[in-house]
Image (tube, rainbow, N blue to C red; front, side, top):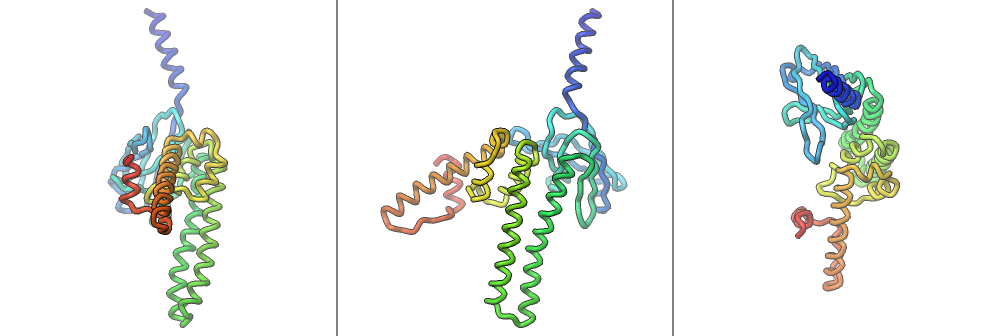
Length: 260
């Protein structure tokens, strides 16, 4: 009996040693969060699943537990996503206020929020262009001049943003940040499509990145849509000399995704 008990203890200890601990300490100055329940959710088996929850009490909250693999996750209040973070070993600090959200204390979270800060700065520059357009109109500058100037600036910001995203994903192909930011980038599209940015990423991708469930499914569906639309457009063009439609309607895309 003692030998069996000893073996069970050894096995349990071995299993525990394979797991790692996360500790997330959070603070918030946002009044509406006080008394609310927060959820830590991650994509597992192609489904968004809650892996932990806690309540905000006097502006403080805490998540703690054991995990067997580093995860890209998001902090939720009910069904509303508040902010992304990485569940990894170590003491993770989360700060939420009316101006910004920040996560620090562990390597991948530090990398993630350095990237997000730069990305948000470029987003704000895009928003500022709209404000400048209104001011230039008030100053009596003609619309054509405004359009040319601001479109050039918008293109420059978009190019810099594209470069930031691409280089960050490439630098993090083999950890959870690469697929996580790839998901963020592709979520701006209504359906899976192939863009020069995505083609560049996949041409340089490591096997680990390509095998990520989200990445592989997205790229497969994007290629299927691309091939079926190209074949369909080629047939229509040959029959009627009609111009090729570059972007299919939502109903056509849904039909393709359904295998029709």
